[in-house]
Image (cartoon, rainbow, N blue to C red; front, side, top):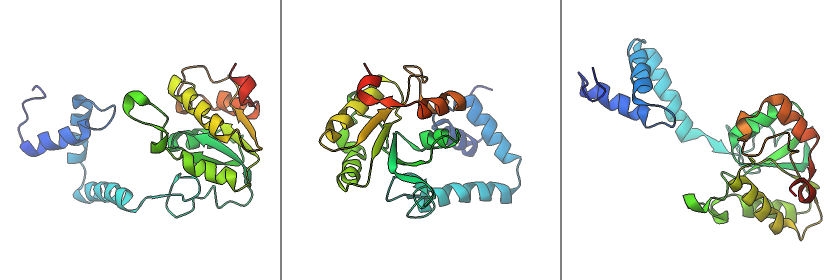
Length: 207
């Protein structure tokens, strides 16, 4: 059977929905749909309900913009964390990657992406204004740039750096244990942990 000849329109529609997800081809989508068909109705309903509930009820922390079940995420509400140290990341995957190292006890600021003119993403599309407001409030001592070491990531770092130059604070970046061109989420925990511990001043760390 080719993947253009389905015995059921319902099957075809389901496969097309799964195939619309990033990184999922038609063959993988077909396997996933067939797996669901073999499950009990209650299991499939629970699966669907959890996805719908996620979309309807998920929140974004009003302090750091991390995904959360409440208005303030667990990290921002943890009084044992260093709230004067803020790690700038692209998305929640990077938060998870850094947290898994066990080497960082500050808080985060999730930008929601990086500056990418080719994709139509400019500074106003990211949570950069909110970051500057935090810094302007005077409660932050250090900003850590932890964006992926791609051209877009470095461009975003530099833009934010220029925005924050007027404020008295320490600005650092991950040491180059994270190879240039690497996506942060795919960096192994040991390398990423060392890059956080051995972070360098942004100006000297990027020459």
